[in-house]
Length: 304
Picture 1 (tube, rainbow, N blue to C red):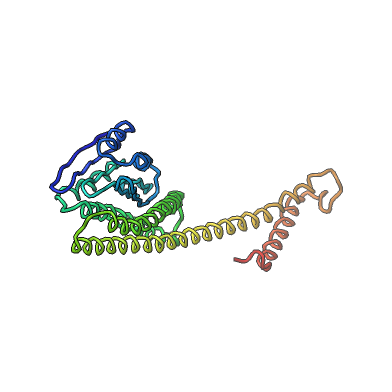
Picture 2: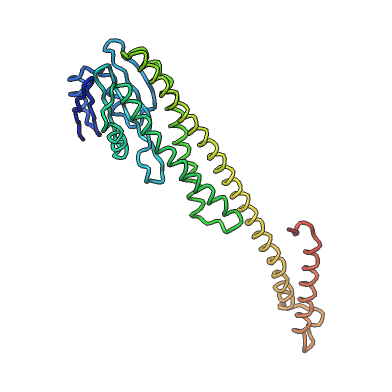
């Protein structure tokens, strides 16, 4: 829990890292930020959005960024950016996000708009890193179709599919927020015509990057889905082969107990009174087994 104040020539940057509710109360009061935005700052499940408060002239942007790129779960968490002409407030809840925001904020930006865009460009980089990581895993799993499918590979496939849901949802929400941000910046920040043109071009580039990222996630999602379907078909086919094998052998191995069972009863049976009766039972068993094998080979239901 920490709040840092960075003063630049034209604006002030207030950097909040996992703040408490009391700290946010003090911060919003000191900088006259709308109290209704406090919920956006605290809620770790907040969805992407861009909004403007007409009474205070204060705008807010919420985007979702990857919480920790090193984790396989690929969860995302929100980052809040509140701004006016002379103030920028950022609220992060994950350490990896803090590092990204600080890295792109080390060089002083000329305006609040440029600072915001620098942060947004930094936040999209981990999405492409995760995209490469998932694509590599998907290609690796796809090559396992002709080999034994382990429980580990199925677990990885399930984790990838779940992670893609989070990432696709986050990129789709960020795209909507960026569309709203473009109008918010133009209408509520004082910018020169040249800066307005530059900001518009950079937002368009951001939109293209997120759109491309979303499209690639859709493609990888389709690949993962097809791989999962192929795995399911292979496992079902192996199960059918196993059941067929067990059925055949259960039919064959059921014959000896039947023959021996009849001759083990205290009833009059052919060859039962002879000294070599056990040889006759073996011969009868072998003949019946051979007949069963011939029948199974000719029956289409047992063919692969």
